[in-house]
Image (cartoon, rainbow, N blue to C red; front, side):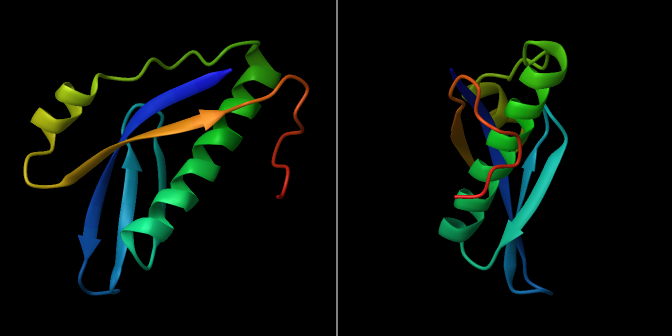
Length: 95
């Protein structure tokens, strides 16, 4: 199963990093670069989806469209992030 959610990247000048916000599922994380923040966000989203599937049998939260997220966060970096969850994949599995 694959899930795709929009994420907003904010530059945190005070801490010299990027903060990522998934508004639809209330996930927040960070990384020193956009690339690092992207990969951390992807892992967090994947773990969230795995846990939702284990607990509820589905991911109840529905993502906004990319255009909706872009309109809401003008001037910020908005990217679509995918999370692939395999059947019977362990929750919080390390890779």
